[in-house]
Image: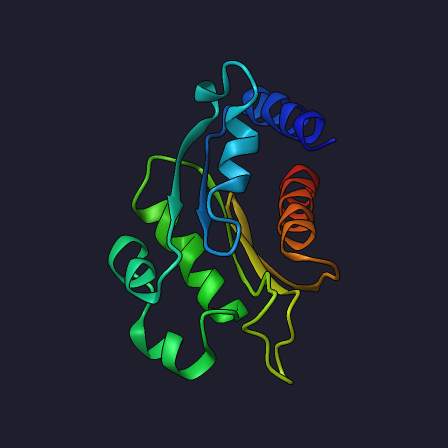
Length: 156
């Protein structure tokens, strides 16, 4: 299923002449892994950033320390900055960013385990942000993140 989604996304991006970049936190490169499983993905996938720590988000993507302090790493504000930073620090036309709490620990009352924020930037459209709540164990949540990200990219 994820492979098929990646392949469909790749075909669409190739038809439109667009290149993709990823900025991942809780998925740890899982989105990029599924994309690069597709043969010839180098024709439409430019690069991926795995920015698990706040320092990496700041240093590699230019996320504002103030934004991280005010909203936390799992917020639409941070993923929006991640998505824009990924575009700025790559040669891609479109980006997807993800940050969340995959569990089993790390959740709070306001942001329980399974809370994941996404942003898609570029492609000539306004930035799109989403907050999703997934259930299950760590692997289930991470897989759901990848499926959601690939599906939203394809729809846009």
